[in-house]
Length: 407
Ligand code: PMT
Image 1 (cartoon, rainbow, N blue to C red):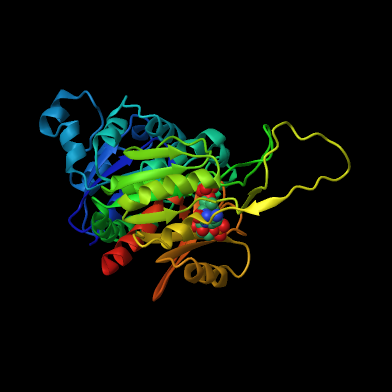
Image 2 (cartoon, rainbow, N blue to C red):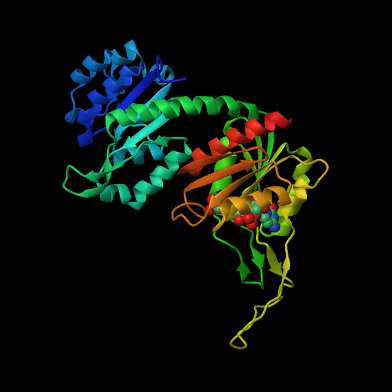
């Protein structure tokens, strides 16, 4: 399925790249889409409503409180009309407004009111793009399911060089077309998860040494929480067993907080009889202190020797049960990624394993992006680097396909 005959609301906001909006409309209509344009006040300083009306063949929508426009097609009607909302160019200000749920103009109101697929092509100065506030807003928007296109890098209108240029209209149109088509296939297969009971482990475990110290790792829980969120959106009933992380509970999920591997195992064992699919993203500590000191361990010499004992393997325990659910493991590896992942798939008797190569900077532990090599008994698929939310959707899509073959 492509964007041919689909309804696209194109939001144009106030950056210099707005002058490319008529060309973008042409590229989208050339792919067969019906396009209606929403222009913010500041975008109207860069590009005329008249030219956008001429190329789209539809009146341009500019104001929230315009009685004539509301009488023709009110903003809620417009939000329902759209199969896809594309904002290009999207300024830093627009990203901030959308991330905070503001609705003080037509475009931000439509963003809240629509259930359409969301695409954003940001465009701004390179320093504004890098600013922590903008990056935080991007993460929030990614968690709403927004697919980002770009920005591209190069020379900017202000003379700076770096990331922040809007991707060219032809490339935006092609990416929207491609992702929209792929998403529809994905959405169809994600439908297979509706009503399924999914248990997900996420985050690190924390193994105490004494009343004030512990050993743990850098897992943030983001991968597992993203999977939980997408699974709940697909209609699954989700239990999220979370190690100590500082993330908000995804909407619609039940959360069980634990600290140690033993507590995580206990929570999972309780949930297994009512679990159809078990997804183990947690970075569980392999060892714990043989005994936890009652009092703070004192500095006594140049060396300190502690004895550790093996923790239970939660995933292997779950997959070894007679009432085992469909079991999906993760493997974070720094060398021979595929070989180690395949060994874990076999050794832990899993239905599927998702391997992360943790040597790539910006992916894996405690980052917003990841890439996975998903492997099962008679197939595999490489999912290239993208946001953990987009990846969660692709992974769940594979899980839904494989689970439906065996159950
Ligand atoms: O939390 P994030 O910051 O988003 O990072 C995500 C991640 C990198 C932690 C995640 O994507 C990931 O790769 N998790 C697995 C980490 C790992 O190295 O697992 P492992 O190779 O030690 O274990 C293999 C599998 O067995 C995993 O599914 C693990 O959850 C499970 N396991 C391991 C040990 C144990 N005692 N019990 C387990 O259940």
